[in-house]
Image (tube, rainbow, N blue to C red):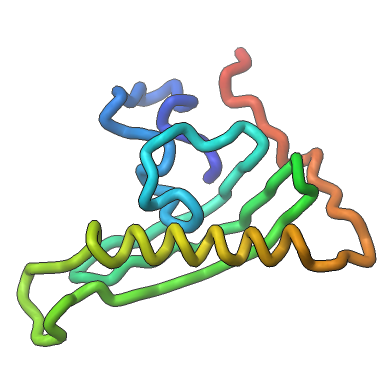
Length: 126
């Protein structure tokens, strides 16, 4: 659930499938590579104007982990039809929502440090 398109071996994905292709929270509105110290285990949905992302986010560098689920409706005129605002509303909102929660989690005091090493995966090994 955390493999990025560039890490997938079967099938192989071309450059059209950038890292955040199905990583809406934190990165949905960006196309640059996701930093290697962040891993997102998630499942997304995109249909009929609705967007959803259910994610477990791990930041090895900051020692942060959190679960976040979001569902939004991106229909601009609320009347139905096929003119959804995924690019104008959905991706920017979900990206900003994820970044806001990540920033909060970086600042939040933690009585116990996160134990994240089991989530450090290497999809490029044989």
